[in-house]
Image (cartoon, rainbow, N blue to C red; front, top):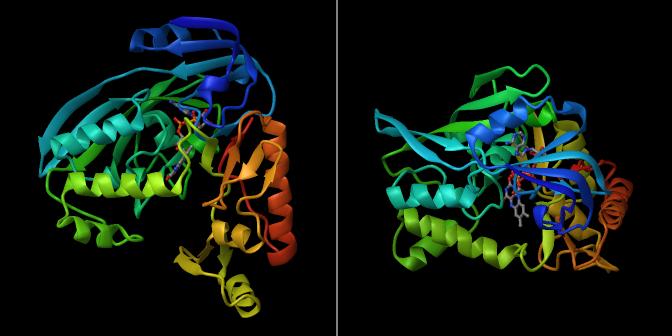
Length: 333
Ligand SMILES: Cc1cc2nc3c(=O)[nH]c(=O)nc-3n(C[C@H](O)[C@H](O)[C@H](O)COP(=O)(O)OP(=O)(O)OC[C@H]3O[C@@H](n4cnc5c(N)ncnc54)[C@H](O)[C@@H]3O)c2cc1C
């Protein structure tokens, strides 16, 4: 296990915010995870970290950061046209996706290039281009950090919802150790989202590799490369409002787009923010991405506090105009 004291977390969060942690542990094997769990650590002052792509640190972290760096993809079985894979929580999400694409395992190609580790991807129920990780999760192996109990959670028990799960709702309570994925051995494509189908047509066909490439191409065009420009992807969740509120909003602002979601209507947070002129806004080194109003960025030396202040200003302006409060998708620490 690698142990660092008083270490900068700048390389460990995609916003690139420079804060320090009292202690950082890198847990690279199942044995190191076991040793950590048996070490009598204080669960109340411990943060489990994946790739730090959904976190905004607003100050130094006074406690222990346990970074999951376990690796491994193991085939468990093949049955009824599906393959079951056990994947360590510390696997880089896109490495796993590329493995599936290379092997011809269908179901995660639309989730290409999302910065995450497998554990973090499940906690957040990542989604893109009409697919969510919950669609391919069979079960999740996790440890309760308070009781030390380790068990498998069925897909139903994981309580997945829009960008959330049981593990996110009970933040700090569980450590995800591994995930069982069930992937199709038969082609099963979802290409109806955005201009995916049109780009595939231009390429002359739909294969698992071409879907991966097209989604990657669109993402590279639209989203910042976190190696160049710090961000955590979408800062706010798309709000879901009751039908009555949607009717009211649509009457007052006919240009707003709404999509049916459960009992209500989902709005585009990006559209709401963009309509108020925030896209491309910059204050010091904190800003709103020039092509994506939902993505806040760090041009270099912004502090977590400055990025959070910008987020609050955006949220207040949306609330003033549209009478609804945006919720953060990013975890503020
Ligand atoms: C450029 C960019 C584009 C993005 N695009 C998308 C997108 O298209 N769709 C989407 O859904 N998201 C997107 N995101 C957001 C991000 O990729 C996801 O939120 C992802 O799930 C973060 O995973 P992570 O491993 O980095 O988690 P972290 O940021 O490290 O952690 C997030 C939370 O999960 C917890 N956690 C992490 N690992 C574990 C574990 N093993 N056990 C228990 N808890 C754990 C942490 O404690 C924290 O509370 C994007 C982010 C960026 C920077």
